[in-house]
Picture 1 (spheres, rainbow, N blue to C red):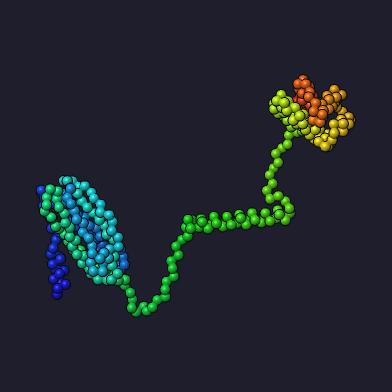
Picture 2: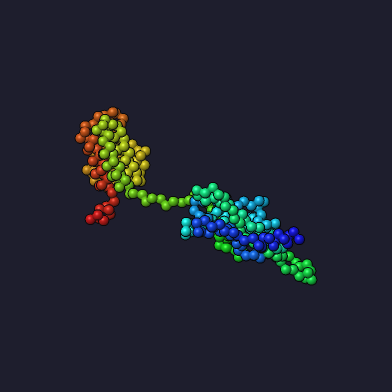
Length: 317
C-alpha cells in the first residue's frame, strides 16, 4: 500500500517553475526510450534553464543509480548553451542500464541555484520517469537448444596486411640466406659489383704527370721525391704498354727491353736521359739544374704521346 501511495504522489508532482522577472526557470529529464531489454543501454538527459550569472548546484547521484537497480554507467560533462532572454541552459547525458526485469520509477531529480545579487536559494525538481525492463521471450516447450556457433565476421584488409607483410619479409630473408649459402659453397663473392671502366695506360700516365708538375716538388727542394714519382709513373706506363716488368727492372734493363719496340730514336734517347738523371738524383744525390728538371718531365710526356696506340691519332683526326 505504501508503494502505491508513493507512486501516486510521484505522478501528481510536476516539475515546478520559478518565475524570475517574467522568465521561466525549468528542469527536465528525458529518456531515449522508456522500454528496454535486460542489459540494454540508453541515454538519460538532464536539462536546466536558469538566468545567466546564476550559481547552479548540480545534482549528485548516490550509489551511481537513478532508481533501484537502474545503474549509471557513464556521465558526460555538463554542457552550457546561451539561449535568448539572457537565460543559459545546462545539459548532461547519463548512460544507464538495468539487469533485472520490471517497471522502475526514476525519482525526481532535485536542482538548486542562486541568482546573481540574490541570497535566496531556489529549489526545483524534475518530473518522475518510468522505465520498463523486459526479459527476452523464451519457449519453455522447446527444451534445451544447442549452443550457436560464433558468428564469423569478414576478414578485413587491415587484418590481412600485417600477416602478408610478415610473410613477404620471411620469404625474402629465406631467399637471401639460401643465396648466400649457395655463393659460399661455390666460393663466389656474395655481391658482385660492376668494376669501373679503367682508363687506358697513356691517359693515366698523362694525368699523373700533370698532377706531378702541379705539385712543384723540386721547386720546394724535394728533388729526390720529384724524380722518384716521375720514374714510378713512367715505369708503370711502360709496364702496361709493353707488358714488361718495368717496375722491377733497372734503367739499363728497361732501355734494352724497349730497343725493338719501334720507338723513334729521339724520344727513346730522351727517355733514357731522364731515367739516368733520376738514378743519379736518387742514388748519387746529384743536384740537377732547374732546366733539367723541367726537361725530364717534358721528355716523359713526349714519350707517352709518341708511344700511345696510333689508332687513337687516326680517330682524333
